[in-house]
Length: 348
Image (cartoon, rainbow, N blue to C red):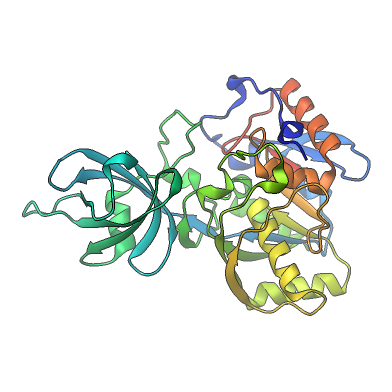
């Protein structure tokens, strides 16, 4: 399958640079995956398309301030690390800039205490392709607290504006730190909207998938079947497994909020097959593209994705490439806002 089948023209002016004042006032495009019918609403109108018994699955990961800027020990050159994946307590897979300066054994320093000593040291243990580095950190205290002090929020490169409120790149239900990027489909929800859904008999449950930048890296092969996804860590709690089992047994809709939730659900569906789900955790590198048969997900709430991205391929697998690309053409004509801080789509 040719990657150019997932390309489209997007004016730069439609790339949302800042979040809206009210989360749920974003626009909502609906797409019937069976007929291709398209509708135009506001996100708070989502309740019109859900029925009692529907189960929404949300990703409660929390973005960490994963961008560290410091200096190389000895030379004093400015260096930057982007934390991608925690390997164990003090070791991370990172993206390093400038990679040519950071060979195996190089040491970096971040921040200073009152005595002028670095708050955090990092040593390159292994060089990886495309600027990747395995890093070991040395510090005193609690690592995540140091990150809150020293790190910056790793906004996507297409966002040029500075974010005044860092919490706007977190969902209102973010709980478990570990992501290098937000599960942005969830940014449209408010606590009030979630309460309204529950009062209407629409159930919600949570899982955790720590989003790595591998999800957003461009596909570099012409034939998408040759693309390899980077792995990401997920956790499915016992309570969510129970609710999913009940929904499947009663033939109720399971609706993933975001492609991260979708990928996690399809991963555990493959793992357990026809058996009841149980609490589980692990790593997933599932790549969903047209031709894939969904085992768990009936509907998807998602944002508008980059051309030629694996995320666009995933939603094309759910609703068909032709219907999705037609919907995107209509979104461009209608002036929808795209990407992380943009508008939303409900595929049902």
